[in-house]
Image 1 (cartoon, helix red, strand yellow):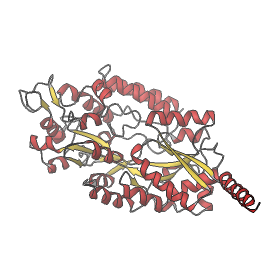
Image 2: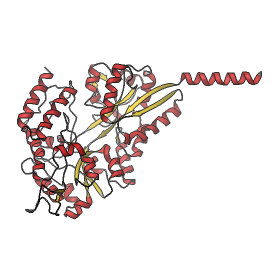
Image 3: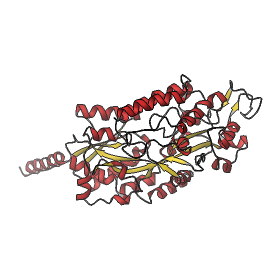
Image 4: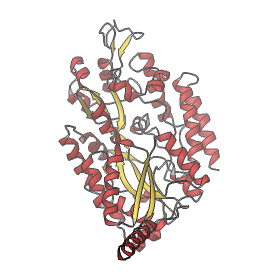
Length: 433
């Protein structure tokens, strides 16, 4: 009888503990970051046994589809990694919890994050995300090809670009480009119809941000997206952007880049690791990918200086947001607060997958990269050059669709950049009126 009582009591207690454990569903899109955040979840649960964290990862397109449809069907995750290009619409449609009262209540220090990363997630006194990381853009180079072409690391690190003749940047990518007979694109014998290795590959159109595609060249040429954050008037018809896009769209005709259609099907990253492209622009979030997949020596180098005498890069930062429909908002906030803490971000830094948002953590991540044989200092260099934010305004999805269509029409040669961007900009600015 006593044994039966003990078993019943134990089962009852276990059942009680199970019932009390609140599950917080968390979603992210980058598979490279999954192990780091799984470790954060394990550490968090050890300190909060009444909360369990269930992490789901999905690729970029499937991710945003799951988030958007989840808002409607009631199946969205409690917490999810958010993007600056997406959150204005989510906030406008009241799908995000305002974190400002929770931050004030728990005295979370907003100044612990790198400058600007916290503020861009706020509007009208409300806060829609807690910063988790930041990224900049650099070039990754196949150093075997560079060595064979006689291009030194110093040359790669000191390139200059202009939209007229491409500057030393174009001279370099001509040297890196090889046809099947072994002639580079500086040679009169070069056959652009039989290219074996392209010297440079831009990733494609890039939509409203052009983060890795064109923004870094356009801004170094004097372009700006709009006058300030939340301003719905854009300048996509700026001659400085027209020059930049025209230059990039003209590279395939010179034989130094693959045609847009080929890039779209293969992807620039696959072209690089496959030895088909010698240099591509990419973000710091891809450091691990290239480390694991490129089977030849590589180097990350800063972006070229533009006509304004500066290098330029988008300084983008992700944050974690809470869905307003979550049934466990207090537990979700505990998790978000932990994700934005020095403890979790130190774990992320040690994994070397991204540069965490808290001041001083980027250096820890760089040390982790160095221990793995990677010099990631080019991204730190870029963070100290001219940086700019992604365009943050209303109607992001519609703006992005219009720019994608416009840019694709330019890159496939259907229409010239001046005409296409003027038309797109007029439609985009009409959305904000």
